[in-house]
Length: 214
Image 1: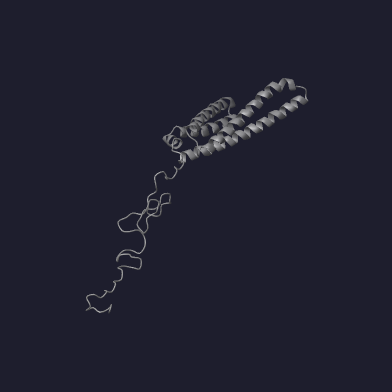
Image 2 (image 1 turned 120 degrees about the vertical axis):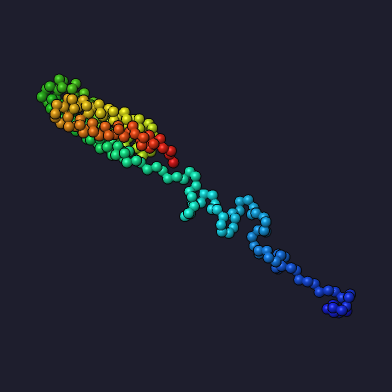
């Protein structure tokens, strides 16, 4: 029997090779990936170009930033000026308070040496308390200046109260100075405290201290 004779009607026809590739794929279909018309399983990122970036990935050039990633607000120039003045005023107060405290203590020692310490002890005690208060106010001024960067409405209100007290103290010094060094110091404190107070009641201060925190 001839298996390869085409004229033999009973002969076995030669087997046709399977269509497609060696794995049974149809012609025209890709040899890898997922079948056409079907989506990739959940959790598997899409392949190829043109797809959006994965969640959490930093945006590249030309892509808008994701919501919630806005740059923090820059401190206005008026707030920077008030902050510098707080540092200067606080440093001067701490320096004056320390010098005054040392001077009062030295005078009391001299008074004790000459036998009149009991008569001056009360006045020296008041002077020491005032010196301590001045140092505390200076420390508060520096603290407020530091908190300008991240502080909120409470820092603004405290700064307003502090500047108001400095203006009151400057006026008292000017009235009691009678043209001496106290008058000059009062004028200097009045100018700096006035600028600080004026900057705290502006719209820039309201916007800065009420800004969203990131």
